[in-house]
Image (cartoon, rainbow, N blue to C red; front, side, top):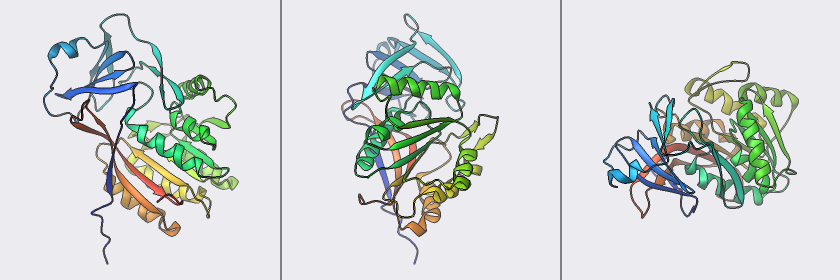
Length: 301
């Protein structure tokens, strides 16, 4: 019998975060508040018209111009150039920072995942977590704060240094986080040979990227093999989970769901998939910014 996939897709919307708000969106842009700063960035999903008056957009502290798909471009500022600022979600603190791309070092739509990481890891005993493509480490901090021993892997030395700054800012210097600057695929392959096992695996792979030694990553070509290797790293009696996030526009949460259903089928998981989203203030329009697939082996189902 064919599987019924009519009720597997969900939507997680970031809510109740005092440090962040989506103020408006439209015409291929989004206007966001990060603490005291207002930032105007590209957003291809916002195909509708903007609601706020032009003046609200003109008063943005920072504006990124460039092609959203390539993510490269230039920043211009209304006053003094922004550099870095401290922000927080729940009890974890981290830095927002203007980069050479449109990104700021964290993704507000991930807040629902941070909540889930904290809740699920806290239910486990002596959890071991692997965070691949870990970037500036916000997810690593939530896992460590909840009690996990974390291995944080990213190919960018700058991202790892940023993650260490965030660790210090959060007062988690003594938390068991191991930082590894390496290509995710090669590191996972070595962990398999070493016989390492994990309860929790977090993945946020880019659409395209290069490893620490110029290794090429292509989402559609390389993700299936990496997920199969991740399956080999999971403890057979794990009460944990795999959390996969994708910003690849051509991917869909349904395709991620079906891939994970195939790879992790022997562990009899409960799989939930869908979209991470941001909603304009006052229950306005919703922008889908990423897809996710969460594979749960534990008690919280």
